[in-house]
Length: 128
Image (tube, rainbow, N blue to C red):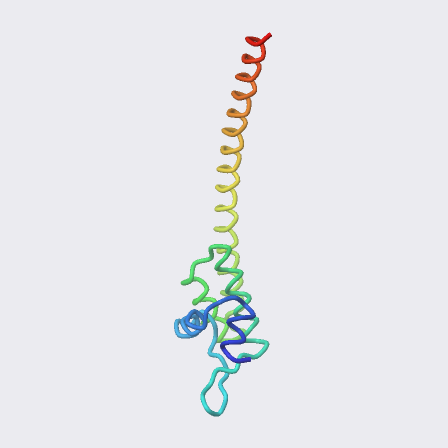
């Protein structure tokens, strides 16, 4: 697939795809004889993985390190797993923080709803 096709399919700009490749966030994309990027299934798999990881808030530096380790081969399996586990732990901590914030917001909204209910009850009593 061309960069334009990949860009459209995965809703990511061609500039971003080039940037990801340049900084090592995805491995080098195969090229045609004329030097044009020719994204294959593996290249697209990396894009999907990186979009998912970035959406989850995984740091670019950690992902670049992961790709570099992957390119070094099977001798880095333990290091890659450790890196992913560390990122998972960080994500779980962020999720716990977000859940606590959501709970706080829900409590605050409940207070407003209870306050509005009381105000309505007072208005009804006055009109009776």
